[in-house]
Image 1 (cartoon, one colour):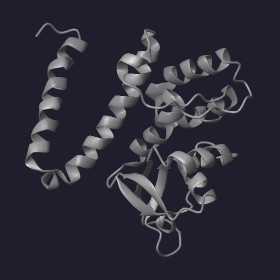
Image 2 (cartoon, one colour):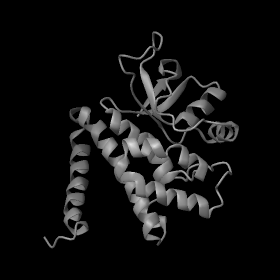
Image 3 (cartoon, one colour):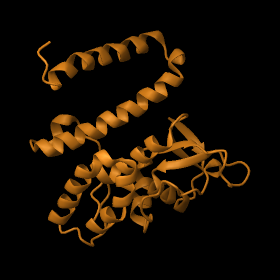
Image 4 (tube, one colour):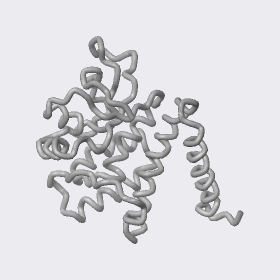
Length: 214
């Protein structure tokens, strides 16, 4: 995680999947509680026509960026992805509406083409998100803020909700591990051992999840 100057972030909207809309309520919340969730950035592609001094491209977190600008803040808490490929960047940008944030049916329909182009495996997830939105009467109502992150046990007993929760957490873990690989040697030895111990535990769980007996 880094505190990145807003002036270093390009206005590039490649990965923006919806217009930020009114962020006044979000800005009030961030003004009182601070920025609880980081935005996701990657290095600005060399081919970009952005002006000098621009180093970063926003992948996810456009509403938080707008709220910080409304608050006239100078920096944003960001998760930096030094080597995030285009397809992986789209997966990260679309993870919120598909797995977490309760979008409206209209907003989900608007990203359907991008999902089919970049994440064809996620089309069933898009359909499920659309059904959830329709069940909330969300055909045109404003989207509500994303729920706070909770432990897996708090996801409820609904198997589908639990699966979506695990997908989000696993994706976030993959991103964090990719970032950790870049600076693994800088992490203190004791902390590296703790990380590896947890990963070995996950590795032992995987065969059970795959239905294997070993």
